[in-house]
Amino acid sequence: MLDQVEVARLLDILGNRNRRRIIELLRQKPCFVTEISDRLMLSPKAVIEHLQLMEREEILSFRLDERRRKYYFLANDIDVMVRLLRQDQISVVTKDNSHRLRTSLARLQKMVETREEMAESLKNLERDIDQQIKEIISFGQEILANETQIDLLISLAHCNLTLQELSELVEAPRDAVSDSLEWLRKKHIVEREGETYRLCDAHAQ
Image (cartoon, rainbow, N blue to C red; front, side, top):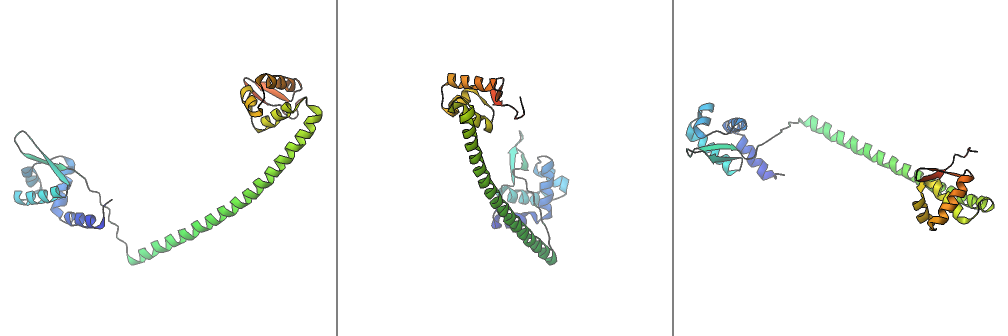
């Protein structure tokens, strides 16, 4: 990123019409001094002065051919965009940015309010989930064979899992988990699809 001094210096360089013409020519192909002079109808002395100035600013560089002629080319191209704003346009831009700021603040306020509402809903949902798990434990103690089966069902209520994943999750031996899953499958409470176990549809018979 150029600082203000460098920008001012480049603008001084580009302020000269002939230097801009030289840059435009060198965008097309490298050229030597006499070629630039002939194409732009400038004296060789003037061309050399322009080239040396732009070479010092590292805009141009050169290479020598077999005849020791200097072929100049663009070392760093320049892309300048100048935007001229009338005073009334500046006022419009300022007003537009002010409007955008107010709009962004209003959106932020709305997002924060939505987050607070979602946080409250999430807290209520977590409370409902805890209550539901307590009911499952209560019902399961009457219907199921052991606590491992209760833990398996609660785990499968979260997502479908493999035998290995369930064994690690409920911290029970793989064989014991496999036996419990087989018992639950025969009761049509869980079903197996490939390597994955999942809860049966609530309406399955």
